[in-house]
Amino acid sequence: MTKNNIKARSAYIYDYMKLLKTIKKIIQEAEEQYNTASETNTPLEELDRLEKHYQDSLKLLRLYNSKQEKLKSKKK
Image (cartoon, rainbow, N blue to C red; front, side):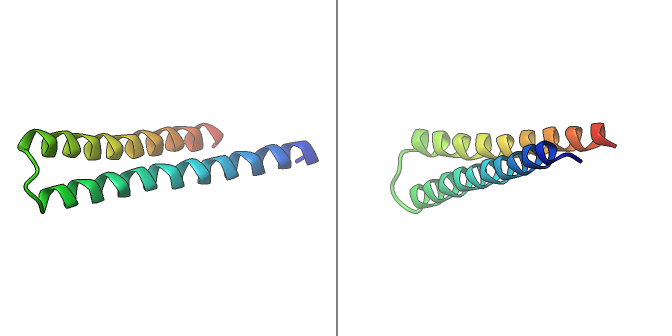
């Protein structure tokens, strides 16, 4: 591996970890918002919206993981 390849790979790994951390933070925030709302007198429509937001954030993580698996399999 050349020095440039090592730098590029390091930057990719850093970006990967940063994006993964961001996705996990989005999921955590969505879950907390949903749980907080479900413990109060929040209207059902708002609970549905918060639940959808939480489910969508989980889909984002699954999509991200599937893309990473495809990249790993291409490298082999």
